[in-house]
Length: 174
Image (cartoon, rainbow, N blue to C red):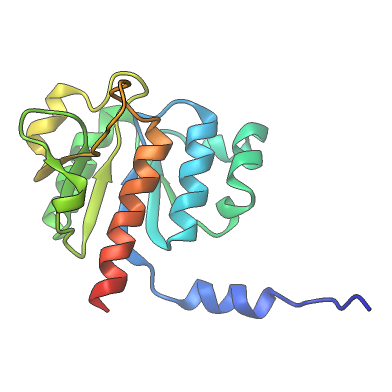
């Protein structure tokens, strides 16, 4: 016997549930599958917002296929590269800690970093990373330990690992 399930009550309850004060800034990310994957991951772990360079991405079939309906539930904001510095400074003024994911001289390893509750995570460009002129804005720069020969992870994977580590730490603290 097949029974119909009503998930609307659960979705309504999730809309009312406070989101984790974690903002993922993907303004520099240009590949549509990466943005769709980040949307899906951010929604799954109840992040506050996903920032992209253009909300037009939400109508792209490739984005929709990768996001798998997460775009319906995940709050998203549009901040272009030319407005990003002001956006990050405003979030810092609102009490958010600015964290970038990048291999840099002052980066610390993801597994040893203690995430603050209110956090903005800045992701870099595919292949290039976070532009050098944005690094001084950041309170912390994290890198993900890598054991193989290839020295860079896909930006969606880096974002997902970082979102999970933030969530893991938040779960342990509650």
